[in-house]
View 1 (tube, one colour):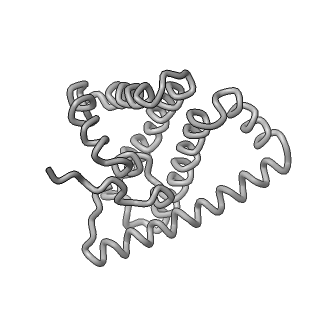
View 2 (spheres, one colour):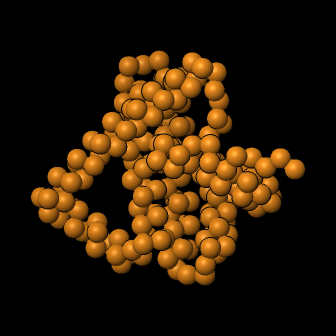
View 3 (spheres, helix red, strand yellow):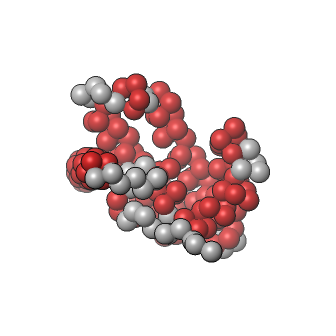
Length: 176
């Protein structure tokens, strides 16, 4: 048996929600895809299959509402990336000067959504997250912090793009 490498990318080096989950704990991911995702319809029923996969993963970790909320949020937060990829495919728009910036903004949204889901599931719960969002969105300091964090993430995603391009120039394809 030759198990796959579990972390082909560092957790902090993935701007794509789909890419993150494909590379996170790959051996477990392959099992879940093979025995849950595909039998439930796979890409023909992406939202249903994804929701059931993350419900299973949440229950695998612990029987708690925080983790179920995490699984359902992750499932819901995959949708913006799927929509973005459908509306602005790289094969059609990737050569335009603006595409990389729009993709980086999408990467920022993906990172923020994944952080939010993890905060709900593993740290704050729904009530704590509600309080955090209120603090970030109702004060000048919160808005300033959010803007600064988004700007930093935007730069970070651009660096990740450069890293991926360097890998492509070297012939490295990590499939995530």
